[in-house]
Image (cartoon, rainbow, N blue to C red; front, side, top):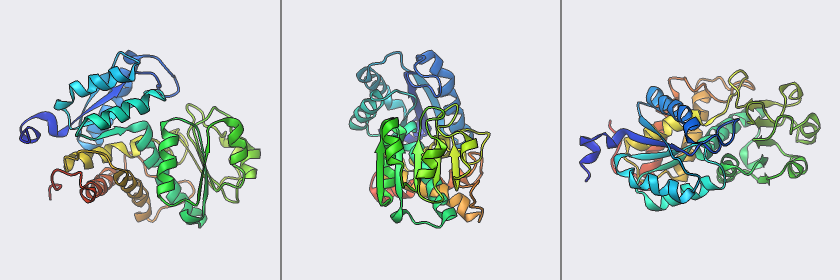
Length: 316
């Protein structure tokens, strides 16, 4: 069976899976509407990381059916990329697949977004002269990105991580926080909330198509990032997942580990830091930065080897 990695398409192939229930900015439009989104993700993997990605929209909202479908065809692939599946079904699908498969499962909306966010926070701390061990982070939202980022920033050593799973809770928990990360409705975060934060706050408002905090209310923010391409500091999972997949495939990893996600975040941040270009309006690189994917891939491959999930060493 091991020869399949060399003699077939398996070794460089990833399936990109969705039921279309949580399309960005659109909600539940079903599997056919998800197809162009999955094609776009596949194109990013091909063009940025030389990964052969294949879209697989599944016509079922049942997480057990989705997981079973993916499992039954998994022998063709070296990895599974989940995208735009609504919570809580996305968690059930991810857990089921991780328990059933011996190939990595990457939830782009979770680990991909979390790695990109942590990279932005790390460089934002450089801008404001803080260290992560001293900061309080308010994370608003109950979706996969918020949950994954809470775990990741806690593992990175943040002094306090507050989970605000409702807007009312957010208005209270943001008080005194150094960092806000959230995916909320447009205008859910206001100037009064910013004033209640610690001095020189860092804010990543990833609501789409319009961020939680209107840019006109961000005057008191030291570092401001959104998910929009027309504003500085665009943060989304595309900063992370092409390089993560390249690194996982290069070592034929059997799983995506927390260490690999952390390594990806640090590598993304270092791309900017090594250019000596960290600034309030430049805390994450462009997804088209030529150094990004190789840096993330190398970090993920190394972390996978250290964690014991690599089948081979990366090619010299």
